[in-house]
Amino acid sequence: QVRVVESGGGLVQPGGSLNLSCAAVGSSFSVGSMGWHRQAPGKQRELVAAITTAGITNYAPSVKGRFAISGDSATNTVFLQMNSLKPEDTAVYYCAIRQWFRASYDYWGQGTQVTVSS
Image 1 (cartoon, rainbow, N blue to C red):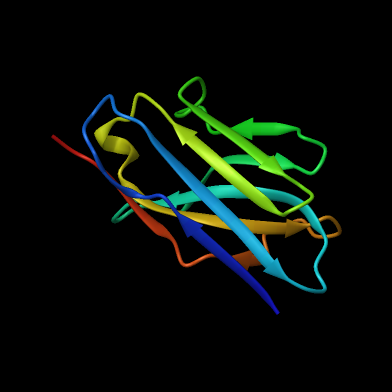
Image 2 (image 1 turned 60 degrees about the vertical axis):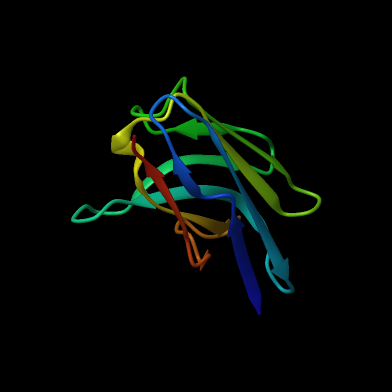
C-alpha cells in the first residue's frame, strides 16, 4: 500500500510564490522518479516538473526558470518551489510516483489547489 500526500497549495497573487510538498509512504515500491502534474479546468493533466532518484530534473517549458523541483530520495519526499506565479498556473497540482521499472506514474496523491489571482 502506497500513500502519496501533498500539501502547500493556496491562494496567491500574481508574481507571488508558493512551495508544495509531497511525501510518499508505504511499502513495496521502488521510486524511479517523483513528479508534479497539474490540471486546470477544461484542460488535460500535464507534467510540470519531475526529478529522478539521481537528481535529474525536467520541466515543462511554461514553468522553466520559475519553478524548481527538489527531493530527498532517502525519505521519498519532493518539493516544488513556484515563483513568479501567473494566473495561468492556477490548477490542481498532483504529486505522483513512477517506479524505476515502469514508464508511467503509478501512485498519485489527491491533489492540492493552487489559485493565482488578484
